[in-house]
Image (tube, rainbow, N blue to C red; front, side, top):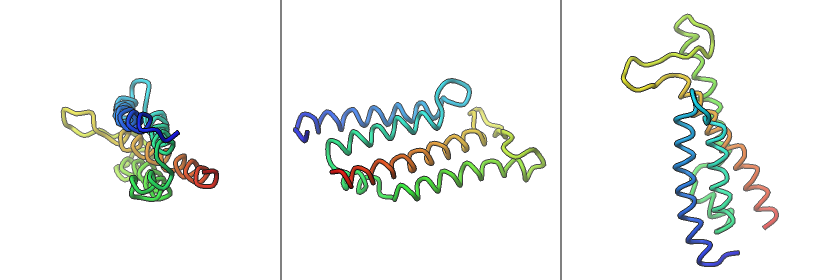
Length: 133
């Protein structure tokens, strides 16, 4: 399944899927979407890349180990709650910046979930693929 047509089409579709993944991440706090489902779409894109190229190619393109990505995500999600805790509110209470953009700790939490899911699922997927392929 390594035809030129499949490889070319896969690279185009992967870019679209990753953009859609980011769209779901950023719109997901108050509407359907968020870090979890956005990350699953991103992992599906990486799985498609793995099928069109190889698991080694995906590891090389990512640049970081999936475990480090997952660990960073867990750290961001846990750390996002400390902003509220240090300001005298309950842990994981949403705090918002006073700008025109909707930036706050819930977005930081969602980005952490996004990275944790990508790292965890991608680690499992790559390990299985390297063993089977």
